[in-house]
Image (cartoon, rainbow, N blue to C red; front, side, top):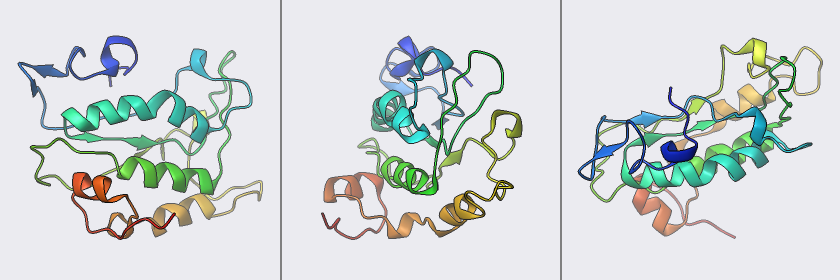
Length: 172
């Protein structure tokens, strides 16, 4: 669970990234890209993930087998940790975008397509995906995850070839 900021934002310079152009590990994942000092006031979890994480995920996915994570929402209740609000459409946008990340040219789908969710066990940080007790979202976050399928992605042709899944042409 290394932070992916600074030198660790690129596998070529990361502590546990690559040596002699080859990844050290078979696969990498990001558990949680939340960094309190980087959150902008009023920002949603999806806006934050696209601004702070997408570029990092793209670099890691291009050079290593990398499994990204999505952040439905985030609320660390400690002082000085701004909340990131979220909603099911934002979660779906993250799922679709991160699932279509380009894979390395040498990657031949020897690993399953995975995506991690931050998280089912972080109730203290407001990221659990239980039914919403306040009635705002109900089961909609869980339903979004249940309906999402790699096999039904609508990536662009370049993304589809890079991801290595059966997809339809994106209709814009």
